[in-house]
Image 1: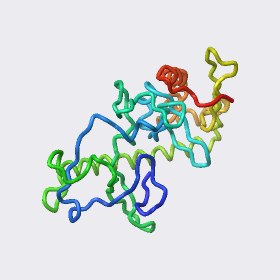
Image 2: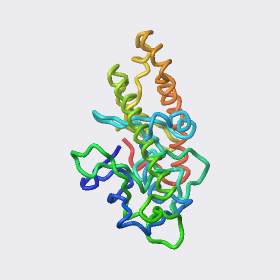
Image 3: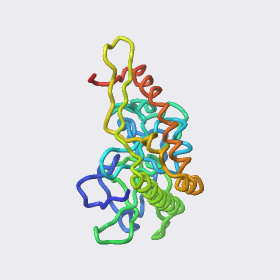
Image 4: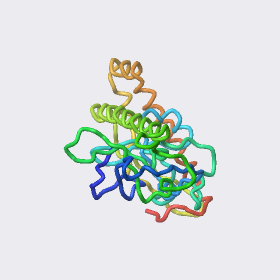
Length: 255
């Protein structure tokens, strides 16, 4: 999940990345907020496998398309729509927020493509960090503060979770369990259903054909419950669709 600061393509939410250091940012404070403005226009959020048990209670878990898929929390059915966040960035109900959301504006990244180490960076365009009078200090003199240390630990744990997620995805691909997803949702007043593509999901027919010894291994290492969490979560797609329609942010076009 880490991205080099000098790359043109920034990860979701990030406009720029700058390494955090005590020389340039000695007076920086971190503000807390009850709003997530960076989330309100995002409908699909990266998710780690460790989050599946909690996430599947609130929104569908799908996988991105392409050769290197990742798990995604589907918080809206169309780009630019998040049914859980209002226009002010306020999360409208008590839901599980993915670690990817809570990590912002920080990120572990390589300062140079050839480097092995990851450095704690932040998005300088965020209003959550700066030389404020309020907030909690990121440094105590030349040393990281407890806030900074805890932030670094959280980002490190996120990277570890990302490695576990990559291993999970590799196992799904190894057994050719992913297929292109397609959803057709009918709504009163329209002759044709709304059609959604551009994501992947586990092929249940192929899952039923997996050898018993493989399933036993997956059950022992915790992979099988993750697959079922994904499959069970798909039942929430209609709920997300209905929320979007009720909010007046229905699908843009019909197929």
